[in-house]
Length: 90
Image (cartoon, rainbow, N blue to C red; front, side):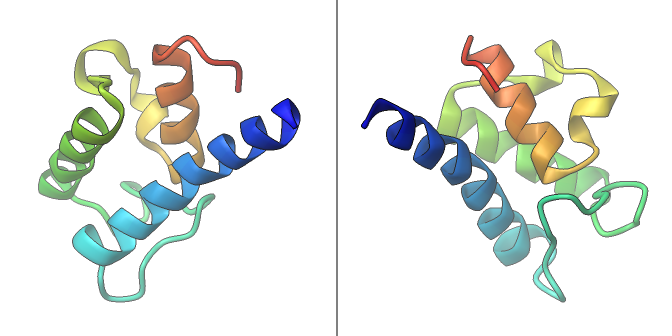
């Protein structure tokens, strides 16, 4: 049961981020978990600030001070950075 809970939690971060970004930041076409956000041009600096605000509100993590540029590449890298900042295993 513990493994299933962990798997659901892991999937929920990616799902939450993908849903938020697709709904509020990139409504025209959305994003996938592996798609490059900034370098693809889908997310600009204002969109990144929206995402970081969502992460701080939803997960209590401030990636702007604790993250690295690679953490902002995709939904998967953002989710991994959230887990790392919260002390969870990826």
